[in-house]
Amino acid sequence: MDIVVDDLSGQDVAEFLAAHVGQMRATSPPESKHALDLDGLRKPEVTFWTVRDGGILVGCGAVKELDPEHAEVKSMRTAPDRRRGGVASRLLAHIVAEAGRMGYRRLSLETGSAEFFAPARALYGKFGFTYCAPFADYTEDPYSVFMTRTL
Image 1 (cartoon, rainbow, N blue to C red):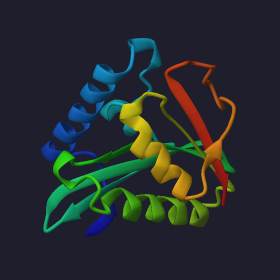
Image 2: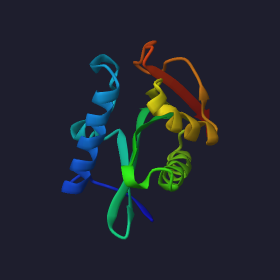
Image 3: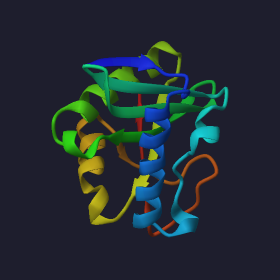
């Protein structure tokens, strides 16, 4: 598997992210959906990575700078046919390492509270993320869970 910074120009990336946003809309009320679309991911404060296996897109993830020492994990997604196959673990390890190299001292994230998101919460816990209060512009929301870790 290859993990590289991606410029979000590929059609396969656009379709992969559209599926991600669509799935988030299907599992969370509109006011509780925080997934970034292509335009949101193209902001200068966002670094976006894709994971490819034999050239096939199997995962993606990003960090969004909140301040010079704090970033947010965004847009973590694994292709449905590759879930529980190590893609997300490999990508998250890469993101955590890269965030440290970028100078961040803290990584935080928002994910869903529903059972659908339980595997994601378990993955984040495995990587040292612990539950926390809302950060940045987030507010308490019964559909959201907030996690953070120091680097």
